[in-house]
Length: 299
Image (cartoon, rainbow, N blue to C red):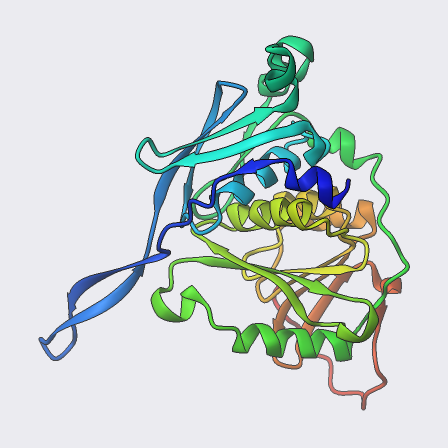
């Protein structure tokens, strides 16, 4: 993947406002202007085939579409894409492969990718996501890097930066946020990408798309989410090559089991100086501290 190949993708920049203003009545009976989160249907077409409709804020629709295709393994490289065009009048995003553009033959005719739709799973969480195919088969062949361990010092710095980040959530609520953070060099803990959307699956897919568009690798990165650590979050982070997953929320049993299998470093309940390290212990470096009385925490 090169900068030149990325620049050859024909991209619209069809971002729309992430919030809208409405009137509400407060506890004093006063009419006030408030910001609420946008929510827009966006139907994804790939080589003229309708795939699904995503509900999104609409801030980065091109990256969302590319990231969704990446995380479903319908596309293996941005080199395969010729164009991503968003049209909000028709509430659609059309992704065109280079194969179709150059030969007139769609990716569906040339490959066996249609079989991915034989298996469909509706994932948990608000604004339910959809996972096609058996991604666990590909997870079995995934190996995550151990070259970039995480320290609790970097974790604390990351959580402080996320807390201070200017977000749509602070204005309007009703969204999930995800961040891609550095875990190498002099900028460990820095936020490289920050995305919010009505569902955490949209936010992670948008970051996946931006990583391709910006040529970013995952091995030396940390992925942060405000949402639960579900199987979907673990699988998508693994497919992006990110070995460390952090959340301020808890986890699900399947998310835990898959993270264990991958030996992903996964931390939840991260608030202030508190965290729970669930898996991938050897990739986490903890500073010595004074022992305290044992307490039981809910995951």
